Image (tube, rainbow, N blue to C red; front, side, top):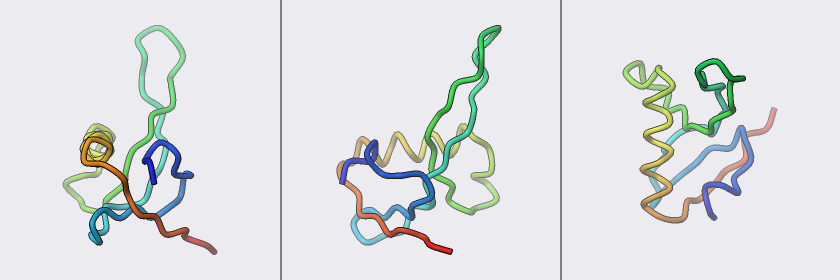
Length: 73
C-alpha cells in the first residue's frame, strides 16, 4: 500500500518490520497558518521530535510500499 493512502492511526510495517503509528502534527509555517504534516511515531525516546517522525515517514515512502495493521479500540 502506498504510504500516502494509509489512514491516520494505523500501524505501519515495511518488509515485516514495525515502523510505528502514522500520525499528523501541525508544522509551523512562518507568519502563515500551521499546515498538517504526516509522520510516523516510532515510540522511541530519541524520535520524540516531529522532524524525526517526518524523516522516518520520508524514508519509508522512498523505500516503497508498506503493509498496514489497523489499531482498534
